[in-house]
Length: 137
Image (tube, rainbow, N blue to C red; front, side, top):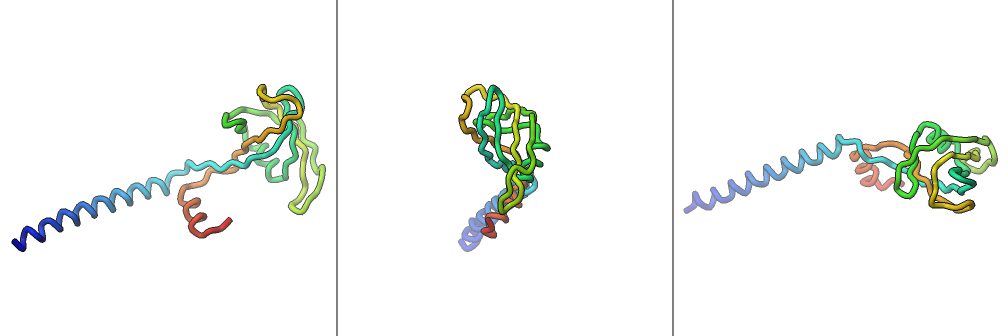
C-alpha cells in the first residue's frame, strides 16, 4: 500500500522533469533566434507622382542610405533617394536634413501625409526580454 502511494508520485516527478526540459529547450530556441525587427515610423509628404519628401535626423538619414526597402501601409517597397538637402535646420538633437525619395505610392495624392516604416535593426528575443525586464525606455 505504501509502495503504490510512492509510485504515483514518481510519475508526477518524471512528467514535471520532461515539462521543464521542454520549456528550457523552448526558451533556448527563442533566445538564440534573431528575428525581431524594429522599425521606426517616419512622417513624409507626397510631393508628386512617386515622390515623397520629409525631414529626417542624421541617424535616420544613415539608416535610409543603408536600407533598400521601406514599409508603406505594411508592404515592403523598394526606393531610391532622389536628393538630400543637408543641414536644413538645427534642433536640440542635432541637424535635420530634407530628403526626397522616389517611391511608388499610387494610393496617395499630392500633399497627403504618409507614415513610412524604416528598418532600424534586428534584435534578438533575449535582448528585448531583458530590456523589458529592466524597465528601461
